[in-house]
Image (tube, rainbow, N blue to C red; front, side, top):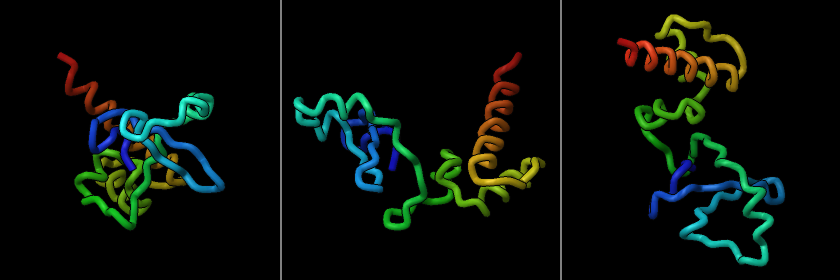
Length: 108
């Protein structure tokens, strides 16, 4: 449940297989060369908050897609932003706010 492999720090890809999302690192879990087409069709991993291998709030705050809706609303309210809408809207609003803050901090 991360964009990089915990073992080699390589890129993690994901596929939908029979209604489930499958994750693999191309370096640590190489695909059979005869299935190269499937590797090309791989998408970036879908991030989510795992109930089996939970992460701290601090770790999830770094990746808003992993936050629960209540946590997103709390973060948006604390930033003085609208906390209404669906999760995808809340994630993009928080990310946009963070990018604006980073841009403002970087400006001379």
